[in-house]
Structure formats: structure tokens, C-alpha cells
Image (cartoon, rainbow, N blue to C red):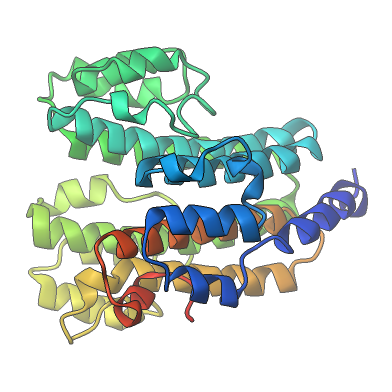
Length: 347
């Protein structure tokens, strides 16, 4: 199938859905509100999120419920994109659900580990969306191993079962890292079956994302977990764009954070680290903004490729992330000027 036939219709649909993104004035209005209820009312009455609030009493909405509802918007949007594809392309887009299911499984694992259980997550938008497992078993989990067993039959299971076979103690950190590695393995497998032009553009986009995540991971591993260089390297993502294996290894074997920072600042990703004490606070936001604008450029320069669909899903992810960040800022009465520093979209 040629690119015009494959992408013309879906790209037209994506353009229409992009028109539903919140505008700067929407974010400027949201960030000035004073309660979760007000945020929900604004989204219901004045934005395209109205569809997921249709049958909901605004006054009954709490923060977790709001998050699950707006994520339903993402589910519906991805499903609309999937409709336009067939074969390996449909399979690839479906695999993007794995990322969001993994993120929620990681939160559940940490909650279970801390003795809070998983019941509060029963209205999750993404649990089971990719894995297709019996979600009741996940919500009944008392231990992380229960979550692993509940995922039997999914593509995640083969990556997770060694955590039990090797008699590792309950550890959300290892669970999280293995889940992240499983996602990139699944994603690479799916995109390897696409046309060469689409593989190339996805390798570039995902390579940049992986570069940034690897830097973040190694930084945290050195500073907060005090992990060995071998373990740091073992858990790096095996995809890259500008950081080759030797450079990753050099970062993992840094003698200290000072040496690590010096190496990172010699790369194009030096913007992630600052000497003003803000690295821990804003690293993730800096990463997200960088990815956002890199994807914008890639969409402009790679017409009629899979990148338009991939980028749209990422952009919607960032929008939802910003709404959640704003809601959290409102809950904790963070001043508007300060709250603005935590969102991906710069106002």
C-alpha cells in the first residue's frame, strides 16, 4: 500500500482531532480556577472533553475520578486512529496502549507495595486495554507478585516472571524498570514490520525519547538509588538517537554526579541539567517540552508517515498531563506563577 492511500484519510482525521486540543486561553483559564469541581465544569462546558463528562455529576467529581475521565478521552482518540489502519500498522498503534497501561500498573505496584492495595484504581482508563487480562485479579492484588501472576497470558508476563523465578524480594523499583523495558521491546517488535520510511522516522523519534529517559534514569540511579554502574547500564533502554552505547556506558560509570553532569552537558541534552538547584524539580518538564518541539519538527518534515499518528498521541498525552498538573496545583493552592512552571505547554 502506498503512503497516500495509507495516511491521507487518517491524517485528515488527526487534523480534525488536533482542532479539539485546548488553546492557550483554556490553560490560562484553568490555572486560575480554585477547585477540582471548577476544573471539571470548565472541561465539560467549554472543551472537547465534554464527551467524557456527559453522564457525570460535576459536584461528585474528585481528583482521581477527573484523571480517569480525561484519560478516557485519550482512549477514544486512539481508538479512532486505530480504525483507519489495517494489518501491521493497526497492530503498531494498538501497541502504544502498552505505554499507558504500564504507567498505571507501575502506580498500582507501588500502592500495593506500600500496603494501600489496588482497589482505588478500579476505574483506570488503561488497565487491561493492551494486555487484555482479567483486570479484577489486578485490583485484588495484595503483593506485587499477584500483579505479575495476573498478567499471565499478556506480552508483559515473560518479562516479569524472572522477578519471581529468581526469588527477588518484593521491589517496585525492579518491577517498574522491567515494565519499561518490556514496552520498548514490544514497540520495536511492532514497528520492525512497517515500511522502511516509517521505521526510520520512528527510530528517530523514539530514539530521542529513549536518550532523555536514559539520562534521567542514570541521574536518578546515581543520586537517589546509589546503584552500581553495572545495574545502571543493565536497565538502560536499548534504543538511541544521539547517545551510543559507549557514551551511555561512560555515563553509567561516572565517578559522581559532577562527572555525570559534565558528560551530559557536552551533549545536545545538556539543557536537562542546571546548576541552580532546579534539576530535580524541572527535569521531566524540560524533557517533555524538548520532545514536544522535536515531534512538531518531525511532523512538518515527514509528511504522509506514521509520525503524525504517533506524535498526535504524544501531544494528547502531554495535554492530559498538563490538566492533571494544574489540578494538583489547584488542590495544593500553588500560586499561578509557580504552577505554570510545571506544565509542558509554556504559557
